[in-house]
Image (cartoon, rainbow, N blue to C red; front, side, top):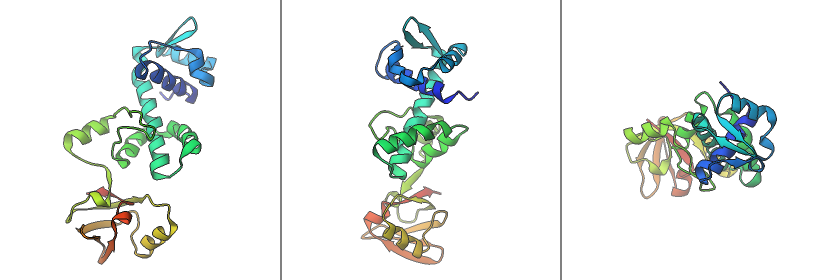
Length: 215
């Protein structure tokens, strides 16, 4: 069952106030504007939280959902700031909006795209998901920079992280586009790779901005 956005915000605030900061409950003022009556009532009905006086307690039944809410928010922060280059207050605001869309496995795809990050851009831990555990046990990686490939390895171009339009135009004019299969043939002194029947060379700086989904 999908929770209302305000209810997710309450769970997120409770997780930070209790699990991460070590308190056993959170006062209403910590929940700020998220603590509206309807959202709190729904969480109480689900036995996710308990209200005693002026404090709200996160029950065991609600811990998993609270943890996943925090995970979605911090993955959204990584996506906005690392990939889309939307930083500062605007990045935080967009992450708050976007986190509520990361349901039905979308968070897993974002996490894999970001190569299972352990912290958000602010240094706070990202609770691991099942995809992180699988990747750790199997040794699989998600999407990595071209600089992480070894000669002879190949993969699909996932995205470019550069915001420099000249660099982007250079890549596009070379026919190096997301979705293309790439084979790295040499990594020193420059990165030499093949896309189709064409061979290209890029320096270390540009290679770090080409991200590959390894085969």
